[in-house]
Length: 225
Length: 104
Image (tube, rainbow over all chains, first blue to last red; front, side):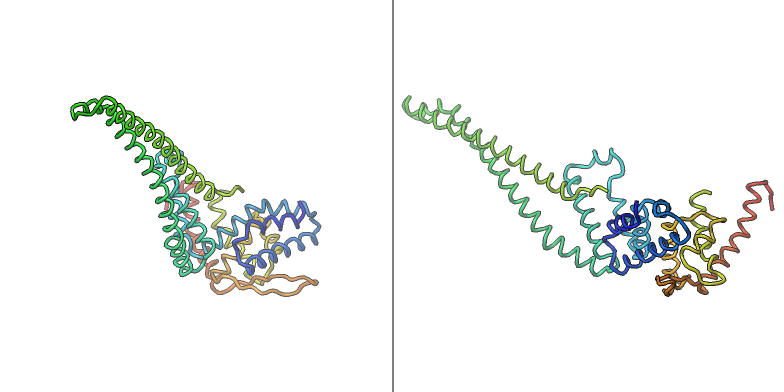
């Protein structure tokens, strides 16, 4: 590839660095490129010698990470992330949702505030207290409401069924046949409506939880290289 | 050569290339060519590490209408070379033991 392409690809992977750092890196490679051209190497030879720009970027980022003392953060992140497929399966659905979100937050905070621990603390504060907790509360509230509607439906279904079954007992209280039939019919209708309500809200709740999980997973997916 | 071993040697090799006089990127790689193969992308992080650790200082100057960065060794850098030379004495003994089974 041409040197311009190589350099552009490299810079694409180094977006998290400051302008000063990027200028330094570009200066280094341009100087090297010019010197090698003067020595008679072709553009293709030179970019081949430089290697994969992604690997070059990875080495540079690793170096600046270590300088920033973010080693501890990296180690902690490695510990909490699942290592094997078994680990992934054994994690509960809750952990599977929460862990990528937490890792994504850690990574974002680390990237954007690489050398300042104060910025890290502030970033964490805003993210968790002002955004995450209210967001989680709203989501939990909505899902709980949906779930309770399903439960109410279930209660109606059960209550109505009991009422229908027990209606013959009403004879003992002196109700007429038509009275008992009306009572039994009303109970059955309640039961039927309750059953329908329960089913509707059961599936709405289930779908809401699944789609919330999917949205979280999508937004915290690892970006492809 | 084993990757781990190479990693440890690279910094001292680079320092040795600038021990007697300051040098610049391409010249350093060319000088090291006969001894150890190092790519430009490997050299950059090493130079950065050396500078961050105070073993090397840099200055940028114009050369043939372009900018060139020169690297100069510091006292700390020389101390690093000296430390390596000491380690090599120890290493020689270990090497003799491994290759020829020589015992002290």
